Image (cartoon, rainbow, N blue to C red; front, side, top):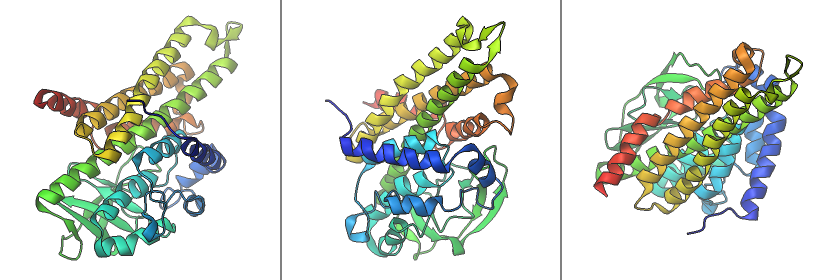
Length: 338
C-alpha cells in the first residue's frame, strides 16, 4: 500500500509552521516558562482562528471533522516549535474520544474546543501525573476500565516537579460519578486503549519534530563554531554524531506516519504500529538530543540557549504514554500473539 499526504495536508502543515515560528521563538518560550500555565499568551486563540483546535471536531459541533492522518503533520510541527500549548491532549486525544462517545459531554465540550474556549488534559491510569491539569478546562481521566470527562472545577491538583517548564505536572484527586462517566466495562476498556494509542502517537509525532529541530540547531552551530582554524562541522567525529542521529530520525518518521493511518482506521495492527512508532521516535529523538549536547558542548543545556527547551521536552515525551522499553515489549507481544 502507498501512503502519502495530500497537498492540502502539506499546506496546512506549512501554514501552522509559519505561525509557530513567529509565536514560539526562544524569547516567547522563555517568557512562557514564567507564567502560571507555561503557555504563550494569545497563541491558543490564534490556533483556534486558524482552525487547528477544531480539526478533529465533527462538523455538526463546529469543527472540520478530520482524522489522525491530518493531525500527525501538525503534531510534528508542534514538536518542532516546542509548542507549549496542550494541542496533542486537546485536539488529538480528547476530541476524538468525545466525538466517538457522543452524548451530552460531546455536545457541551466539542463546540468549546473548536472555538478555542477550552483545553483538555489527559490522565491515563498508568501515568503517575497529569500534564497541565491545573490550567485545563476539561480532564479526561481513567479509573480501571472506565473513562470520565471531569470539569476542572471537580478536581484538586497538587504540583509536582517537571524538568520541562512548559509541561507542568500535577497529582490529581477526583471522585468518579455517573455525571462524569463516558464509558466503562468492555467499551471503556476498548476506548481506553484507543486513547492510549492516540496519546503515544501524538508523543511520537512531537518527538520527530523535536529531533528535527535539534538537528537543525546543531548543524547551524557546527557551521559557525570555529576550532583549530575551521568550523567544527568539518571534523569527522562531529559529522558522524549528527549523521547517525539524523539517519535514526528519518527511519522513525515513516513509522509515525504509518501509525497515524492505523489509528485513523483502527486497524488490527494498531497496537503494533503505534508501539513501533513510539519506540523508534523516542530513541531517535534521544539520539538527536545526545548529538546536540555533544556537538554544542555545555552551552546546549544552559538556560540562556534555546536548545535546552527542546532537549527537556524530549526527555519528558520520551517517557510519556509509555517508554521505549514498554512499547518494545508491547510490540513483541503483538507479534508473538499474531
